[in-house]
Amino acid sequence: MLIGENIKNIRKSKRISQKDLAEMLGVSRQAICMWETGKRDLRVSTLNKIAKVFNMTTDEIISGGTVGYPKGNMAADTVSVAVNVTEREVGMALRKTATSKSVEFSISAPTAKNVAVTGSFNAWNKSGISMKKEKSGYWKTEISLKPGKYEYKYIVDGNWWTDPTNPHKMRNSFGSENSVKEVTA
Image (tube, rainbow, N blue to C red):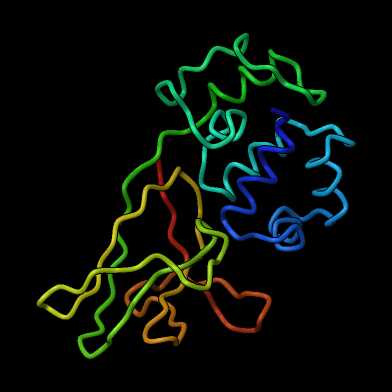
C-alpha cells in the first residue's frame, strides 16, 4: 500500500480533515491531497512531522497503522515505498524515531461531571481524551508521548480551560492561551 494511502486512512480514522492537517503542518490542503494520491513526492522530514501530528512512529504510518514487529526495529529493506523516498532515508528516519514516555495530565475539578484533555498530541480532537476522577477531586490520565513540546487544554463539562497549575502558556490563533508541556527524552 502506498504511504499516501496510509496517511489518508490514518487521517480519516483520527477524524482530521485535509484542511486541518495542512494547517498543522503549515502546508496547503492541495499538498495533502497530492501526497495522499501519490502525485507529489513526500520528504522524510514531512513524514516525520505527520507522524508527530498523528502521535505515531513513521514505521506505523508506513505499515498503515498496524505494526507486527517491535517499534524502531524495522529494516528499511523490508519496506516497499511507492513515493520518491529512498530506502536509506526511510531507515534513517526510523532510527531517529524517539521512544514515547508516559505523561500524566491532572486537574482539580471536584464538582465536574466530565473532564478530558486535548491538544496538539491528538490534533485538538474536540472530544479529547477522557480523564478518570479520583476521590480527591482530581481528574487524571496518562498519555504516551514522544519527546517534544505539546500545547493542550482541559475540557471541563464542555468548557475549555488552561492548566491552572502550569505557568507555561502560549498564545493561540483564537486570541487565547494554551498550556504547554515539554516532554524530554
